[in-house]
Image 1 (spheres, chains in turn red, cyan):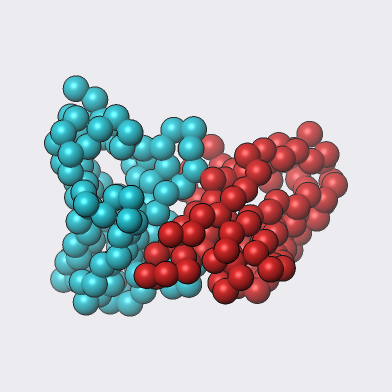
Image 2: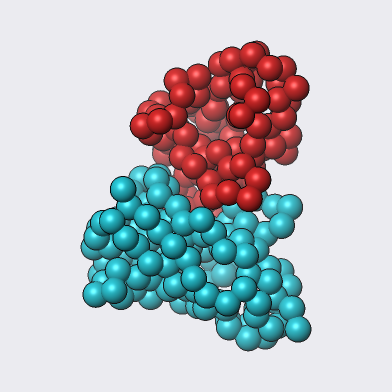
Length: 108
Length: 115
């Protein structure tokens, strides 16, 4: 099955822009979705499809994709954005689903 | 708004079977794919498997030999059985709905494998 690779940790200064990436062969054929998970809480969907946000997700969150890499961008990061971010996608075969290892975002 | 809630023992002994149930409220379980996902301490999310309304299942190859997911549409519930557990199966277990992406999640339940 395919794997999705994320940087373990990223930091950003308050109010600045940060990009979190996710790499994997399956992303050449399927969009990634992105999940924010704060400590002790369930993951929350923040981006899906080409660049869609569920209701209630601030528009500072956006998504993009190129080749085998998907990106989540936070424009003007806020203190409350500090969390783990996970990418997810379908696998290339057998309709399996897969997640990246997660990226811990620190807002300085 | 659909809500999901996990239930089951928080402590399981090594070599025994971990059993959890997810109850779906505010919507029918008759559509979408219904998933189990876990997060071990200090690690990322791991997809365990899903079931649809017809009972068709799909499992993570790394867990397939030990996993069974079942569904009871009359109760709007689906369940996870993971047998022969070890300490490596200690994790927070989530149930979640998938229709192209995971748009609804349960709050999660911590299951510890220990004697």
